[in-house]
Length: 154
Image 1 (cartoon, rainbow, N blue to C red):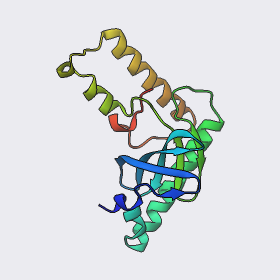
Image 2 (cartoon, one colour):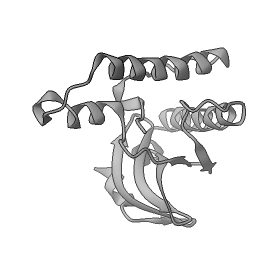
Image 3 (cartoon, one colour):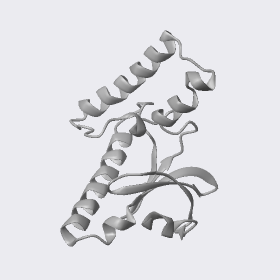
Image 4 (cartoon, helix red, strand yellow):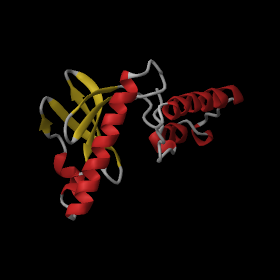
């Protein structure tokens, strides 16, 4: 897989460690930046080597998403939006969520693991997701890819 070519790469003071997730246009790594554990979202290396129109679409989409994250953060004190710590042309540095994404969290805390969620916990989680999305929509932004792997859990 092409994403493994970047494993443990040093990028301007950023140390990439292991892959947390792969999307159409990006790869998210766990890493270290300024002695802080972070998530680093990089433009997917395979997008860089695809057909020119696909590469341009990937770059535009990636950069637009990065700018949207920065804009949301600068306009909000909403605790339900991830903190963007910095960005470059082909990367975004994000706060690292200790429980990763909702999909992983639910599977690691499932009934088969001896854990069930109370109605109150389920409602609180749904309320936090709805609050974050309400803020995003109030900024005239449509997420477009909302699913459990794109919801991060603190």
